Image 1 (cartoon, rainbow, N blue to C red):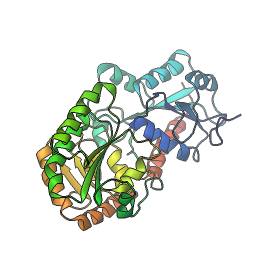
Image 2 (image 1 turned 45 degrees about the horizontal axis):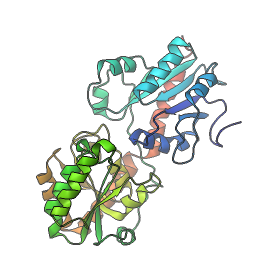
Image 3 (image 1 turned 90 degrees about the horizontal axis):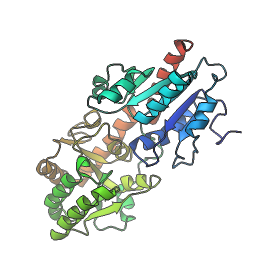
Image 4 (image 1 turned 180 degrees about the vertical axis):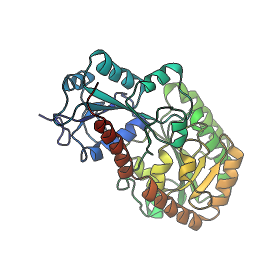
Length: 358
């Protein structure tokens, strides 16, 4: 009996997400799996998803894969992390199971020696950007991450912000882990410069500070308190994945200013709800942001440049709303979840077209 109405007892594809903590990879899998269930006989192996889809254990996935699925010469395992690649190589090369391995690579740097070796052993590699593909010599296809346009839908920003219970008329948000490489301090420093001149705006920080980053968060809160802005630069903590879209919808402007990001889903999700964007030049942000049209780009780590751009944008909320609509148009046209699922499907089909496992 299937574990879930959309999951197959004899899957031709098994998607893996073996990390327990919810991450950007988890968000990608969480969004894609329900759609891929409509395309394939699908299995899911890993932590139960926030949308309620339960997962097989690795042992169950191995037992399911002892023989090919009906109508296919082999089963495809789609993995996204190093330890999942290791499990796949064990299954394919040691246990000699009839599986082929697809890996999605997002990192925009040259991998270390061991990950490079793992990636070289994959049957197909999907890179999420051209920059990521340039770091992986055996990329099969470039497939951008996509956004669920229904979940991250447009609403009236003014009404949504009024429901937040926070002061002001407009919200500015940064979304993701609170830590140095995510640039939370860059955002805070820019807000301390810009916010005093714009009393209609309140800034929110939505994300978890893990124990090793809590001193960093505490220092930022102390800096905000010293500036007398604790009521206008608000830490929301970790927002449940099922609720984060509401904060995107409440914000007129989304800031993403990490010092490094492999891809960076949050501004894409925010744009889908009609947020204008200010992003640093990393991740896939330069493929999303059209300066002066749907947002602006800033150098990484430059709080002064960020403050200057934010001050200019906050001076014209009507223009910000128009930018936000154009940002949604960009995501709709180029970065939909359906486009991502279709791109992945093309890789699967090419693998099966190559024939039997050797």
